[in-house]
Length: 228
Image 1: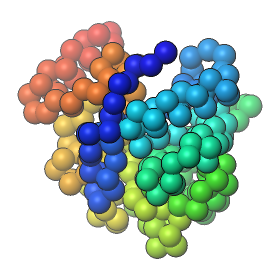
Image 2: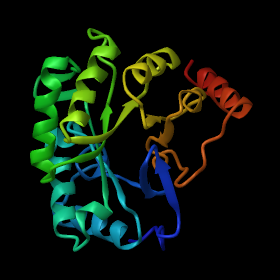
Image 3: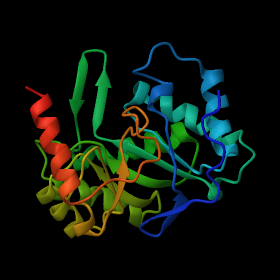
């Protein structure tokens, strides 16, 4: 089934990173939506790339690393030059047999990155997100360790996910934050970061432009009332 006719004419800038305006979130290929099929997952990613999409979004937690492996296989077999594609992945949510925990301790971030690089089969991650803020670790310490990965050439740009305005300001003071992944956002632009919608297709809004100002406040208010 093909949902996208062409994304090749829409270009988006995430900091200095140039991508297709429409990206492919790959989580559902490994978890959350029923049984998975690697062959169909590879075909889906290839169809997206053939349509002009260049940004693939994954995370170390999706399928406990399986998702990154699928993305890596899809990129390596796509016939498209690696430097023409952008891979975004995330760390900070750790899924184990005994449950899920948050871990963004600076002493372990390099190892998480190296493991993602191996699974993806690439030398550089284009956009590396802190998937969730670790409540046991100041965000400045996590971002400082991420910035070291940029210096080492393992990561090109940094992002954060589901942060408060204050957390975003603190993170950005340590190293430029190119992208913030959230469902509802009013504070991202003020930090100079780019908003990347999280799961817009699953929310019935594929390719939608995120609203700003009063419209965001109105939507957030409606959400609060629905959560009673």
